[in-house]
Length: 518
Image 1: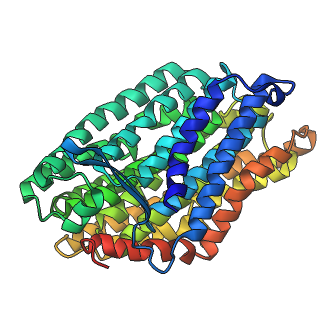
Image 2 (image 1 turned 30 degrees about the horizontal axis):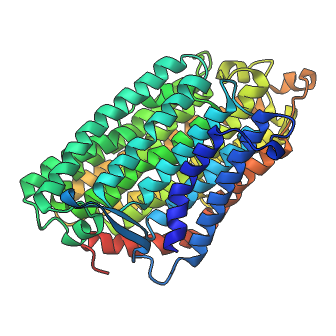
Image 3 (image 1 turned 60 degrees about the vertical axis):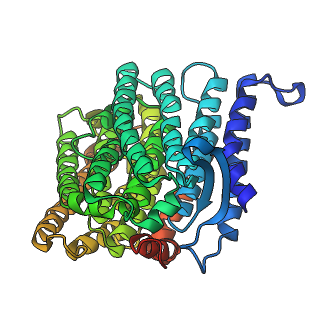
């Protein structure tokens, strides 16, 4: 199992190097470009298969225990170790990353975004996968920082070289925001390591902050929290996200929303909560306040974009919706309760599945219509998607109702549990304040339903009198079915059987909040 986890983390890097090398004569086929894209599908498929085998071999009876561990000395003078391992918190995120990257590679094989050489595209995609997988697998603070930063360069180039309009400006905004946040986060991580004498995340979680004074914890949480909040993204540090999503190619948007945003919230759960609990306790009300502000802000921004005549971009709307959805995740974490943190972890996975599917669908709409402008999509030339491409319209409506939290689908449980956790927060947190936050978040759920239903009505239903004159467009194709079906199936499965995820996360969360004690 430990070799399997090491292969999952390192395998994409080896595949990235191989993608840049000349293809063997027998594997070139008719098109060298298709050959390297096929290489990307093969490598990401192998990583996904290894992740599934790892999940099947995971001891579900002891999900709070670190499994498949590797612990090797790396920089003895700093006490930095190559420490890998997974538990019930990190395993679902590891599998989600492997799945989404494989589906993006498969989609790109048939629908490569316009831009430079496919070789560079595949290599960057694999480096991005390795960095995200490493973030969820490493158990050393400095290794976590390196993995956290490793994803920035490939995502920058994916946006800047294969993106759409305004891609250079969006890519620069993305890299500057995240780098500045990461510099501050590094200072907090170094402070913890210097004050405790170790960077080992398991040992620090077990110590549960006892090796640091309250003032040191407060400073560490502030520094680390800023870096994580930028990546999450938390309002008001979110402004890089809409531009990045709007300019990114389809697969870039899928990975940015489905995987990269989760790195920030995972850092709050894995590092801030267990390692500096007193510092987190001081900042929890402020984190909750920013979280609910993001929920309302994201929803209102989406309503403004969905309004007729606003020239709102559908990709931009979904990006703003992510600000609101990640607000629910942060609210659950801020409650510092098992219920809230479990809800946050569940919402993480649900958001990755549903928003990944939404960005795939918007990319398909843009390919067919040449634009993601809502006024164009809902106008005379683009109205009534149900009548013109019924399967595509049905999938868009499904993803929308899943995103608004329809009971029975994955989006419901995470947001509900996050609000339940905030309804009765941890001891010492102001319950009246958190009740106010819950009430505001509840208004956010209504606003979320409003803008998503407006989108479905405008894009899918159109004007009945115009439907007979509208020509049909290409409906969902075979490669799109292959790329999207797993996300649909898992959205339904997680909604109908939430114990699949909660059975993994709940024991691990209890242990984490109890200071490493089961």
